[in-house]
Image 1 (cartoon, rainbow, N blue to C red):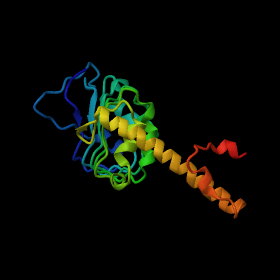
Image 2: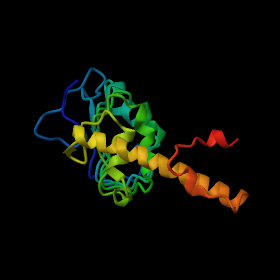
Image 3: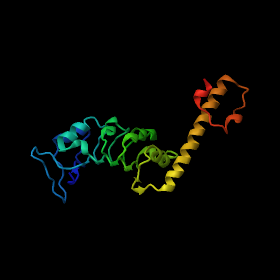
Image 4: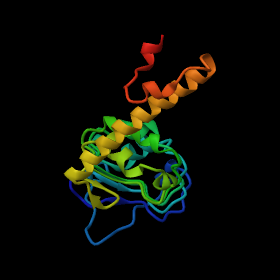
Length: 205
């Protein structure tokens, strides 16, 4: 099951299902197939197309791969993807995911991938989220098992800093929530007295 990636890049397709009528590009390593003509590979390349959503991905995996549930490497770079489709969360054996050069605009989308325990490598640079403050820290916190992000190693020091960032970010969010709540319910209340104390919204009920 360790043949070369089934290469469907540069096919000018706008939907994943558009790949069903395409013939994978051949590289240096020859493809191997089973008796049903399905490829003995655990990798799929759909990069450099115009794909905006991943509807039909499972259908494409079953169409091309002998064991689609074993997919471990998926290249979706340089497309027009704007969000993390739930279908990616079904790929429980996925280890490497390339999403760079897309149109993902909300860094919280990455949180959806938290259930992929085997995922150790991801790329997200070249998306709008790359410019968000705390971008790398957020991704490392959301995917604590990562070994590489955007083609660079995730170090132990970066994990520590990411956890510190998350703690500070959550504290700031709690503070903002308190300020918003107290400004609408108690105009004379001094919010400075609570800034140093962690507050759970449930304590306000």
